[in-house]
Length: 335
Image (cartoon, rainbow, N blue to C red; front, side, top):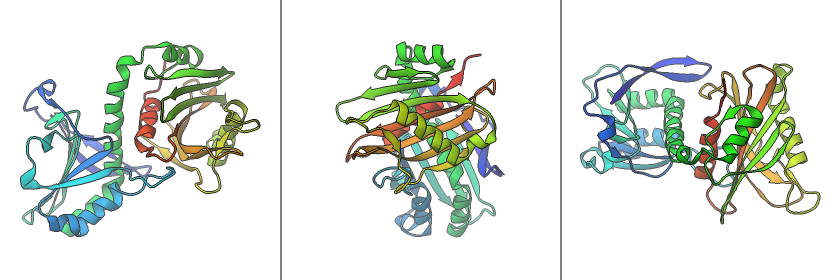
């Protein structure tokens, strides 16, 4: 069991976890496999009043808020709660757990994060605070770190499923053309390859997923501006991704759901801009969420945008988008 104490150090608006190891109580390989749905957090409270009052409200406000860039409302995480006396061995196997502990005898709030505490893979965060007010202050201040921590855990779990089938022709093609390693599962195929461009697709009976690799000559940091990223992405989409009808093509929705760009610190590359939003087909009614990551390659010659999208009309899309996100996060360049 690895224990991590969360420190209140912010770097570029991202709070990082400082790690301190403790002796495992048993071999992690002996632990039961975790249970629970994708992007679901089980909150353990001491009583129903905590869930209904400011503690529960703060948790719902940050972990249950709407995920930006989806066509219909879906939360970042689905939340369920139980009382601490009901935390049985079955519930201890849940993949994501948040434990609320109010102890009036302590002076300062303590936040602890555990990997694989009762099951594997698993993320457990425990917050011990002297009062409800202190809990809310600490939780609100560290909420972005909690979201980042649970998201990272979700990506790792998804990749444990995808990696066994990732040695395939599609992965080999990406490696050959771009010098990239990427854990792409077997159902994805290369639909189109052109100069510094590749379109990778998965077509299931009810939904579609895709990953688009765009490489362009890197000139200066102005290419990281949201306007530049969006214009470059739209140019490649118009050129290479046609719609079902003549003169239709994929583009970005810049009217109803504006693309939102953020500098992130946890992507495999040093400096990366994440963009979330909605794509649509020009002169048609098709659309869905997208997520992209823009960074400079290892030789500083190319600027890359890895663009992932989902099409699942009238259905929930969050979990399908998380799968695409996990694949993109697996990217690394060959040495």
